[in-house]
Amino acid sequence: MDGELPSDITNVKIARSPASAGQTWEIVLNSSDLDTFSFVDTETFGVGSWNYRVIYEDAQGNDRGQSNAAIVTFPGGA
Image (cartoon, rainbow, N blue to C red):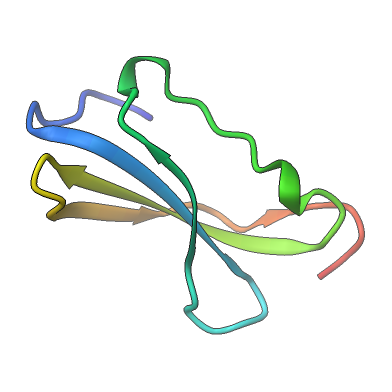
């Protein structure tokens, strides 16, 4: 992640959705350990393309913003 998050952000989630499907997002990471935040989606290797979304939350669970990541394509096709 580039830059610094606002001080009231306490949680980061990453959700994924098949690139060929609708907007059905599944949370694949829910991390409050922002100092050592890292993510490798081992479940998707070899199964095609996925869209990823990063969701930022404050301590009350309020959505403070989302960003869409690029489509990530894995070997095996969509």
